[in-house]
Image (cartoon, rainbow over all chains, first blue to last red; front, side):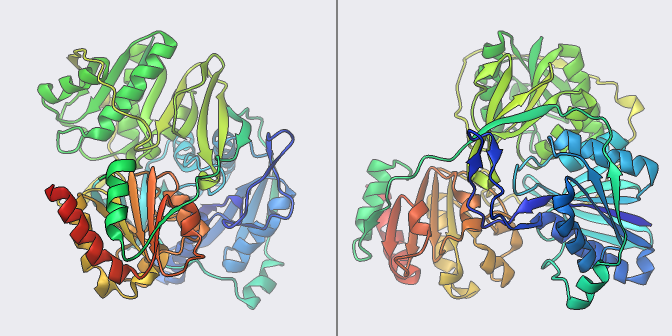
Length: 249
Length: 323
C-alpha cells in the first residue's frame, strides 16, 4: 500500500501576521515556515503505521503545492521519515486549486490512502481533503482522531458533533485528520536530516486549473479595550459585572 | 432560484445551531431576492421539520428513506447536491461544524461552486459575491470573492443570532436519487456525548490550564460549570499531561470556540490558545501572573490563585442566582 500525506507550508503558529501591498498580501518577511501542525501529525501517524510490518505499507510520500520556497518544509517531511516528496510547481490559489493539482498527481500515480490535516493554520479553509476525495470519487472520512490497519482492514475513529464513532471504509480513501491521530509530532533526528538530502524530491509542473475563489484583502482585528481588573478579595464585583454589564450570567 | 440550507439533526431533533443557520440563510436569501429551502436527511418528525419555518424556511425537503444512516460523506453530498439542483440553489449554506466541514468541500467540487468556509457575517455583496472570514486562526480577517455563479458558505458556530421570521414551512418528502449511491462508510460503534453540554455549542465555557496544578483539582471547575450550564475546556498542556481528555483541548490545534462567556482559570494565554478562544464575546481570566498574555485578551481579570478564587466565585454566583 502507498500513502500520500498532503502538506501545507505555513507560517509558524507564533507569527505576528502583517500584510503588504495595500493589505492584499501576507507579509512573508522574516517568517519561519513549518509543516502545518495537523499535517505533521498525519505524517507522524503514517510513520508509525509503516513501522508495523504487518500494515503492508511500502511507501510514504509527502506532497505540497507551491513555489520552490516550500521545499525546505517538504525536506523536513523527508527528515521525519517520508520516502519521497513531490512538489507541484503552482502558485497557491485557493483550496480548489490545491486539491485539483494533487488530484492530477494521484490520477497518474495511484495512492491507496491519502491523509490531510483538518485545516491549515494560515487560511483555515478545511477544504482540500474533502475536495480531493470528490475529485477522485473516493470515500472520505473527516475529523479522524485515530486510524489503524488491522490485517488490511481500516479502523477509524472520528468525531461527530455530539460524540465519537468507530467506522470503516474500503481502500482507497481520503482521511482528514485532527488532534489525537498521533500523540506528538515527530522531530527529525540528525540522521533523518542527513538522509533527507539524498531522498528524491520530484517537481511536477502545474495543471491548468483556475481557482474558484480569491482573497481580496486582509484586515487585523480592532484592538480590545483594556481588561478590567477586579481584586481577588472582591469576587462579588466580578459577578456583578458579568450580570449587569456583560449580561452573560 | 433558492438558497438551500442543510439542517443536520441529532436523534431527530434540531438545535440552536440549526435555527442560527436558517436565520442566516434567510438573510442571504433576502440579499439574493429569493426564498430558503432546507434539506433534512434522516428521520425527523414533521412537527420538528416545520419549526424551521419559524426562522424563515419556506420549504423543507425531508430525505428519509431509511438508507441514510450515519454520516457517509458521498451519500450525503449526493442528496444535498440533488436538492440544490432541484431547487436551482444559488447559495448552499452549511454549518462549519464537523459534518459541514466534511460535506461542503465535496459539494463545492460536485456543483462547481466556490466555497467560503467559516464565514462569520452576511455577504457584503451578492454580485460579485463577497463575504468575510477569519484567517490565520483569528489573527486577521479576509474578504473572499467567489468567482462562480453558485456559492457555498459554511457558517462558524455561535456567530449569528436567531431571527424569528414567523413564517410556516411546507414539508415535502425528497427522494434525491439515492438508489445509485453505494454507502461506503460502515459505522461499527457510536459513543454519544449526551449528558453534557457540547463544547462547540456551549454559550458558557469554564476552562482550566496548567495553573490548576493537577487533574485532581478539577472539582471546583466542574461545580462552576454545572452552576452556569457550561461546558468544560482546557489548555493544551492539560490535555498533553493527560489531566483531561483531548476532546476538551481548546486552541489552535484543538477546538475553536465562540461562546458568549469564556472563563479561563490558570491559563497563561499562549498565542495558540488565544487562537481557539478569541471569538468569545467575553473572556474572564484568573491567573497568578499579572503579566500573563491572557489579560490582554480578557475583558475581566483577577490576579490570584484559581484554587482560592473559585470557591468565592461559586458562592457569589449562587447568591446572585438566588436573588
